[in-house]
Structures are given as structure tokens and as C-alpha cells.
Length: 266
Image (cartoon, rainbow, N blue to C red; front, top):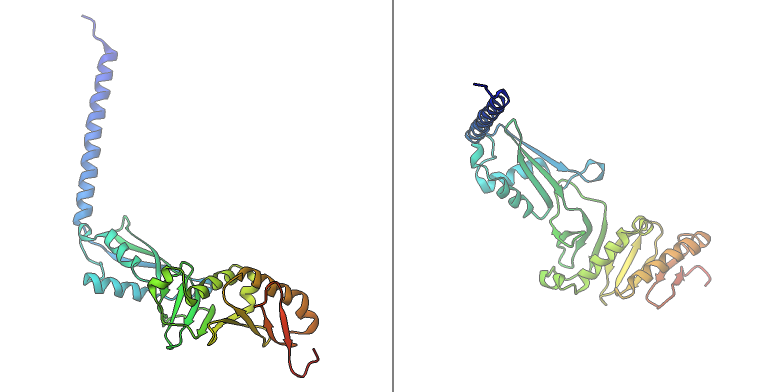
């Protein structure tokens, strides 16, 4: 009787494949079980810094937040007891944190990666309460670790009202929008240092170079006013001198009115 050698070989390959797959599943299941029954060895915290290596948050701040909520710092805890998503959600509810990524590596180290929110405006209201607004309009507390060199707004600014801000109304929202426009323009970002709200509720600006008081008025036609200011600085100021004008008035439609110091002839 003839034996089908090819058929035998095929059956042997199928059997070997089944056995190999079974062994692989056993190894994986054992590894997963062993992983779950093991313990975390270390907590690594990585915070993405701002430029110049500065940060409003420190690793100790992140560790303290975790300890206060969970009662421990996650080191020496059984892997299957660590809820990574819960840790991420906890950290992302911290105002200064924009995004958090938490994972466990092959050495059972817990890695926490944090991206901070970037403030665009520091606000000091009329009650002397100070805080930051980031690029998304989120209010951030003052940090004890680092003070970013950004635009400052002060003067007759009312207390922060979350509902009013979300409704995109009020002087604070106008200041926030103006800060974004200035931030997006390299020339203005380098030139404008401070926003001030006077008793009339109008915005004034102070430059980094020169001693002019820039009367901006309300937020209406803000982009046109800023463009007019840039033209005035680039075309007029270099010839007259940075300290020639005492006041630069942008409130009039389509023009810039410069008032010289009283010793200067108009």
C-alpha cells in the first residue's frame, strides 16, 4: 500500500502549528498573569517645559496630586490595581495641565508624561486677584515656581465670571482676544508690554520701548487698530524718535493721532 508522504508532512505541519500556537498562548497568558501579579517599581514623571527650560509645574507637584487622591504614590502597588485612565483623568483636571499620558513599561515603571497649558495673558483685576489665561481661555493659578514673561492686563477689570467668559462677553474676554492677536504678531508681541482698563472701561496699552500711552478704546475693529499702530511705529516713529509722542490714539476710525510732549511743537 502506497503511503501519501505529502499528506503526512502536511498533517505534521498542522500539528506542529497547533502545538506552537498553544505554547504561544500559554506563554502570553502566563506573562500577562505574571505582569498583573507583579508590582510597580518606579514612578517617572516627565513635564514638557516652556522655552528656556522653565516650568510652572514641578515633578513634586504631580507626585503630591497623585498621593492626595490615591493615598499613595503608585510605587510598590500591584500592576492590576493601577487604573491608568483614572490617573490620566485626574491629572487632566488640574488647570495647568493640558494633556497627560500614563503608561507602564516592560520594567514595571509607571511613566507620567505631562504637557502644560501655556499662558498668554496675566490678569490682575481691580480686587488685586491675579491669574493667567491660556490660549484656550482656561484660567490658571499663579505658579510659585516660575513667572512667564507675557502680556499683563490690569486696571478696572471685574472679577472673573465663568458664565460671562464662556458667553464671550465682557472686558475680560476682550482682553483675552486682544492678547491672542498681539501674540500672533511677532512685531506687536515684542512691542506691547501691558494692557490697562481705565475707569471708562476702555483699553490702553503700554509699549516696551518708549513711554507712550496708547489709547486703544474698545475691542471693535481691533485688527485694523493694531495694523494702524504697526504702520505708525514702522513709518513714523523711527524718524520722529521713540520718545517724541506722549499719546498715540487709535480710537478714531481709520487713523492714528499722535500727541507730542508739551515741550515739542505740534
